[in-house]
Amino acid sequence: MEEMVVEALLFGDKQAQLLAARQVAQFSTKQRHNIAEKGVVPPLILMLSTDDYEVIEAALFALLSIAFRSERNKMLIAKSGAIPVILDVLQCENEVLVELGVAFLLTLSSCASNKLAIAASGTIPLLLELLNSQSYNSMSLQANLDILSTLHNLSTCHQLIPSVVSYGGVATLLGLINLASELVIEKAVALLENLVSSSRIALEEAAGTGGAIQCLVEALEEGSRQCKEHAVAILLLICDSCRERYRGMILREGATAALLQLSVDGTRRARDKAKRLLLLLRDCSNCGQTTKQPKNVVLLEQIMRQIEQGVGEPAGMSVALLEEMISKLRT
Image 1 (tube, rainbow, N blue to C red):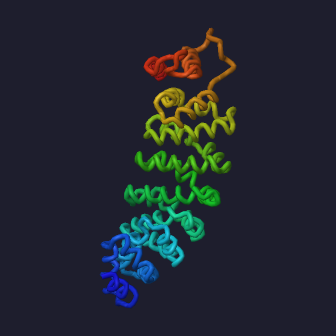
Image 2: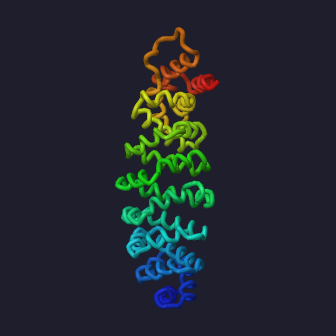
Image 3: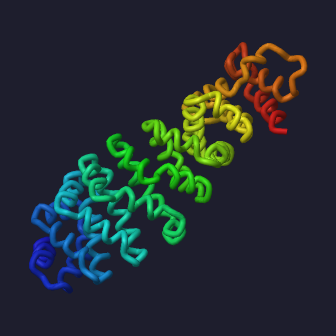
């Protein structure tokens, strides 16, 4: 069967290649490895350049199967010229092919050796364009998640972060955090943290974008456990970059109660960052003064002192009592 598929892909007519490409997806890992070594990747890539959507779909499935769990095959596919052809597929009018193309690009981008080549082909601006509102709404949830995952894979190569930022990545991600579903928001916030933690330009753009702090505080209040971890990390970076400018902005968005709650029940990393941000937000000029202060300020100081002593520690308060105080702060 392997020999027949290889022969059909290398020498067969259009119909024979179509049937052979469909057969590849049924092969075992070992069989897919064998046929890749026998030269089927170039003809499969060539099939992506046709005008027949059925042929393109079959070739994409075949290439995805060959790339699956094989770093060697991912590199082979990229070196055989697949990336520019895939970008053409991403710009076609068939939504199924676009989503398959995105999944294929995600698979290739998981290989470290392919990242620079993928970016050099103009992938980053195209993916960001697909994430913008009109395209975003027309694609499936999985396709949007795949695009964000691909950009995240590329951003782990620090050489590529300036490209993501310069092509409008920060604004695009903030837009998604405002409008998207929970799973998309989680990935968008994670990618945004990666950008702002590595690029001063990205950090300044995120901090200076109108409504950005508000949407990050909302993610802090309503997001998933991982989303809250990334949101608090971004807010900490923003506040730490210029406490005098951003402290009041974060406080006005009502972040305090959510940060206190996160310092109790967030992930280990989130708890640490929430406590550090709370200390930056704290008005130390009033520490120790309890007269003529608003009730919430006094309560916040009491909570902060307990957090410093350690919640659940012998010298500190219980988690239950702290949560009761946080509840009072919310009212």
